[in-house]
Image (cartoon, rainbow, N blue to C red; front, side, top):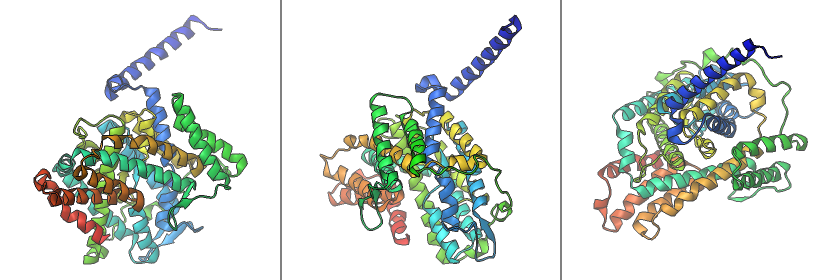
Length: 463
């Protein structure tokens, strides 16, 4: 039975909630960007679900994907998978919150795929200590911060012609779709490109998930991607695709943290052989972040008529700081995740999407068994569908002009068939400059792109 006092309490709570939501709306500019708190939260959950695999992949990439819970590096330091997972979740949350509050963008960050496998191979083979890899990552991050503060990264973006900027978004779309086909098993990419095993329950479940997301999207059902992920995860339980954990929550093991936090072995990298590693780490993250920001920004309608991203220095600076802080916490290069496109497609336009992802990462430190049950059969179709939506920009590339279309074509093809965003962007810029000069239109190329050719060519040679 409600009393007058009860009504007063409810009214007071409603008033407080209204004030909080009003302040959030003004701070994150919900009305200006045509979004709402609910949409942003759903977008954040969608992004997290598509990138939660990093919590499994990062420890495996560094320590190996075998049954062993740890690895001992060449300096005799024991590196545990549990410690790497905990710090990965923590730093991903902190830097993603920074992206949300400082840049007010719906982009999530975590340890990038590429440098982690490169460093993992060196650590596992005994060729380099864990501390040396972290030292290289730290130096790379410091270079990021300096270039960002000097505005050089912004200059490079503005020096690129619109066709190349549009092509980056298209290339990102194909790359995301490639990840979906690969992770779900619908396609195979080991010995050439081939069809997966369609008798495998996870494969036909992934195909079902793709059609389900398409069906929901056709009828404009909000949260279609997240719904698809949840439905496939649940259907995977009786089919043996989704493995239920023994417990839904567990306290993280903090025992190995002291071995990876502030573990820097600077003495081991004072050799010429480490210079290519620093360069590869730097270029890989630089162009991967560039591609993700421009690609997802284009999908969210954040680019102007010339393909420029207003205040792009903010996400660049957050990304750079992430790599520096990440190295201090024992993590390989921190980068803006291409899976942010899933959240953007779900309607994410502000930092609330990023903050939602960050909260999920913090919870995953204690709910890792629950988070990690999401199978590739669920996230794969989501990535394929996001890829489909992101390639629509291909219609904006001027294919009628050969000298304008050749660079974008090379960029897209390299991204697809090398499985690397950084390689695709580098190759596309090189091809664009080459064909412009070959066609007698050298003056149409910005001087900055000519200067950029040197490190881009070295990137392929060193790699």
